[in-house]
Image (cartoon, rainbow, N blue to C red; front, top):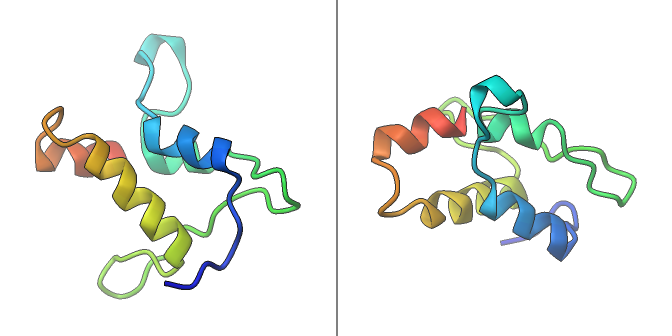
Amino acid sequence: MSLSVEVPAEVENEIIQWRPGKKDEGGPQTLKEFLGTLDLGNGQRQLALTTDSRHRLKDEVTQKLVERWAQGLHGQESASGVVTLSG
C-alpha cells in the first residue's frame, strides 16, 4: 500500500484511539468530524476524505487509519455502531 501523506505517529495514535465525547460537551461526534479537525503538522491540514462510487475512501492512508480505528472498536460497538460513529 503506498502512502499519499506521512502521518506523524502521535497523530496516527490519536486517530486510532479517538472516541466521541459527551454530546453536551461539544466536540466531534463522528470520526469524520474528528478527522476534519486534525492538523497533521506537516503542512497538510487534513486527511483526504473523498470516496469512490462504492463509498470507499480513495486515499489509502486515510483508509488504513480508519480500518485500524474500526478494529479498535471490536467488541465495544456493533457493526452498525461503528458505521454510525464513523460518519
